[in-house]
Length: 288
Image (cartoon, rainbow, N blue to C red; front, side, top):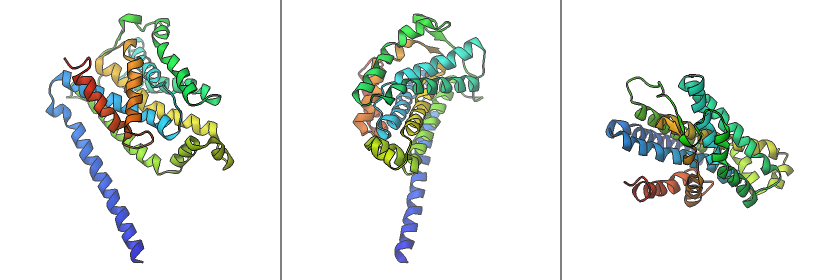
């Protein structure tokens, strides 16, 4: 009896500890625009969260489901251009553009997931890497993208009283928090167990009655949503999008962050990506 009571108290204490931690984390992230008034610095914080959100998405497919896909840059490009074109060509609101970007990203992720039916591992990685290298050629074929000159989008009408830089930062910060909490819930759910079983042994998953194609499809959808959201924020945060951003450097940075922090771990992408962001900002092209 005492053991059950102590277990219940421990579980409740753990739940409150997690809630307190996420509350502190949310306050720390959301207060940045109130402390940092420089648009350039807010933009760097926003870009850092874009990298982290993309890494969290990749961890969903690569870390939990074992799908070695390198298509995250392609998914980001699809959502960035999908939302930008809808905003420019149809004069749509930010909400409609965001929905269009997410749908575009998810569809592209599912299309690029088709080779996973036949190949896995490094072979799947190479196939999806070719898609990254093809981004500039594909963009030039799509009318209205601006080709090498890029696509300029209007400033989004979002939260009143906040600048465009602050609002897009707050959106990516909230999205990062939501994805972290959703990932934690997924890990302890039955779906988390199914993804891990697929990662360890597809035949074992089939033996217990799981549908590997359905689970793999859901893994790619869960991977694509945060990655696509990051692509939309790139477009509306900068009010400009060009294919030069979605290159091999972005692909390797996000992949390295996931591996460095420990794939298949909740905080692995964050722990692994933050040092790379700091190096990129203070030693790389953003250091000046």
